[in-house]
Amino acid sequence: MSIRTGLGHDVHRLFPGKVLVLGGVRIPADVGFDTHSDGDVLCHALIDALAGAMADGDLGTHFPEDDPDAEDARSLEFVRAFAAHVRESGYEVVNVDSFVVLGPVKLRPHIEAMRANLADALGVEVARVSVKARSNDGLGPEGEGTACGAWANVLIQAVAG
Image 1: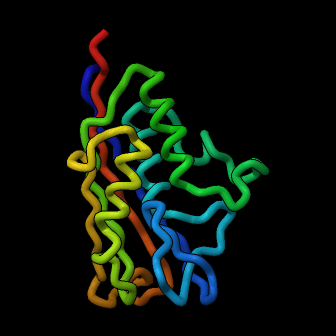
Image 2 (image 1 turned 45 degrees about the vertical axis):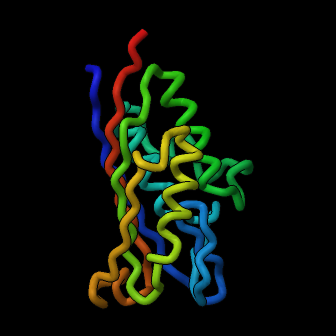
């Protein structure tokens, strides 16, 4: 098949006094992720979407939690490494559509930096990467600010060769 789509999702609990990183951008907030890597749910969802499009496992398949090299790693570097894997497998990223849900923290001022980081890590133009933010109107763990979730949908195509 020459065109494939993939869908990814990730969610992590938020804890006071931890660092919040989304799309490789450190977001000023009183809460953040207490995870093995930096916990960047947007990058994690993107990798799952890419892996799904290729029918090649998921984030944990390629970047296991018990890998000591992943301790405190920047998830944006995982995206960069997985994008290289996508290219080596004969595909290119056509576009990414994603969104982050986090109620009380305003993400709009950081969207363009997230898009730029993800596009750079993927090796594509910024125009191919969409990042949106939702508050969930205070509903559910993401809306209440006790968790942060992200979804990503990707389109990849086989490189003519």
